[in-house]
Image 1 (cartoon, one colour):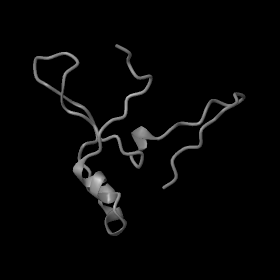
Image 2: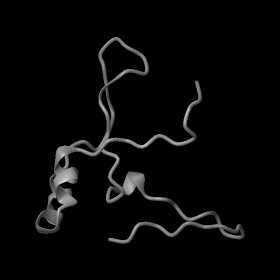
Image 3: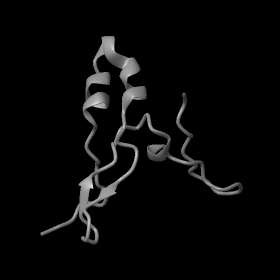
Image 4: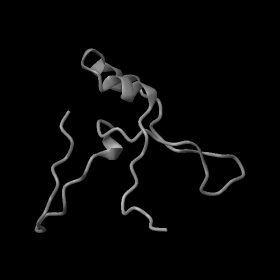
Length: 76
């Protein structure tokens, strides 16, 4: 069994609906901004954080100065 190199986090209900043209402002209503662990369990999440790229914690950060291949930060 192979493990994917990167894991895609699921979207919250608000961010999934915000993908529709008339609902783009719903990204601000997303409340899944952090992982919530299952009590008394290590590494098991009760609620996963939203994987929407509109959230700052999912944005790619620019590489340090002097390196190549810098990814642009998220635009707001």
